[in-house]
Amino acid sequence: MKKLSIVAFSGVLALSAAAFAQAPDPIVGTWTLDVAKSTYKPGPAPKSATLVVEAAGKGYKIAIDVMGPDGKAMKWGWTNTEDGKEFAITGNPMYDAGTTTRTSPKEGTNVYKKAGKTIVTAKTSVSADGKTLTATSTGTDAKGQAINNVALYIKK
Image: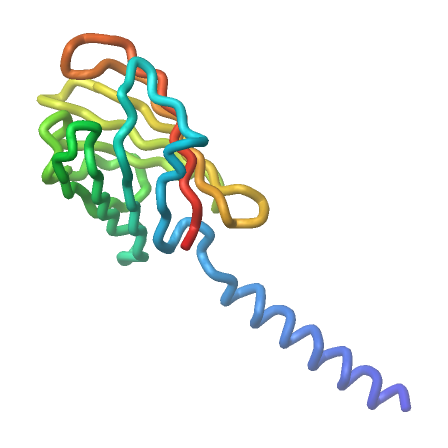
């Protein structure tokens, strides 16, 4: 009986370890901006935004589709390695490069740059239930105004 219990416990432990090892990365997925629950200062807020995060080697491929407050669409993105090394950003006239540092599986910081100068720093976090991503951005917009945005995304 003891042998059977040890074998059963070992099996449960192995299954638990396998399930934990294969736990999905909380940041990976498709996220939709909840405009009503987000704040954009000085504003105005975009009409909509979708953020797609895919695993890419030791980092992520990020694609962002935004419908601006003026109704103009913009697609931009990057691929990073999350080690603080600079990467190219394409499709956004405000930024040409950035860095990402991940502080935990659910938290990280992105620094967006233009011509070597830091423009915006965005701290991101995924909620405990994995359903909400919050990006808090501070910096300066193209007009030199201070930015203080809190964008709330819902996982699809």
